Length: 381
Ligand SMILES: [Zn+2]
Image (tube, rainbow, N blue to C red; front, side):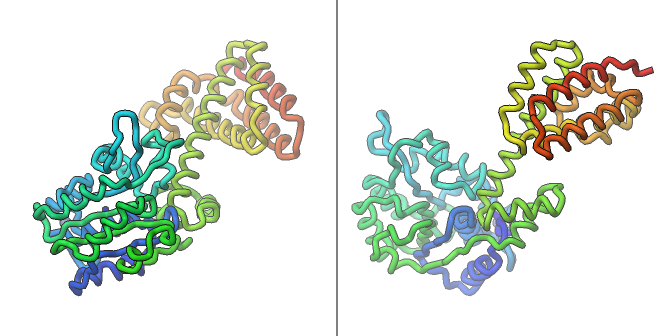
């Protein structure tokens, strides 16, 4: 994890980097901040920076042997402790029993929430915790010599899920740590952690991500209009996990639009009237926003299929379609041509206007589908 890959948090990054350069790394720190602020990502990036053998003033190098291991979260001097679940097979679970799932979880996104961790480990309805036997694991690991780095780093995610016996044992370790050991506790609810631990850790307070940084990060990754990015930023409210959720649900929405569009076109082309009526019933179950999105999506698909039909072999890559859309368009595009594109466009556009004006959706979609049946039959020549 490189600092540059973490959204915003410029001031905290600078402070963390300065503490390493000035050689005043405090041995027990509490990274406290709300969900989606990037506190776990910052903890890993900080540990990586300390361990990097070729760091610069601003970041880890990303390519030294230490950084390469950090990239996969497998550095031998980097240890993780996190809440785990008891199962029939595992009555005394420790973090290492779930290390494979944990690395996967981190690789997917370091902004993930506690709830998503429970989902990934199929533990949604169970109580997860950091149990007493974890503390002997911690002691064992920290008493080992370092393998490759100067520091051993132990990142404890969600220390508020630690039971009191574990917390007390950990407290002893924090009070008298083995040499060159760094504890980073990463917490969302510090008030749920026993006072004695809180008072012995240095607080690194992490705020939610500022809007400008969220905007810049999304802009860098996605080819969206500014207006759309502003909308995502507004909804996310400084939480990068929310940004990911919004983008994911959008993708899924597009995929439903794709299913609906291809189904409609197949039914219309083969004139299957009873199935078209069923399709209308199905699509009108969604709300008005879904209907609008579907029609906007359809307008784009019609346009792209028309362009694909017109373009010669070597020009076909100018069409902006995703892979599965291309597969569909290879057969379908020949039915969208100069003799029907304008009418199709007008019909879908009119439907969109009627939906926006709160028209009766079943009638609008049935009318649209039946007109499409006729328009797809028009001869291209
Ligand atoms: Zn490095």
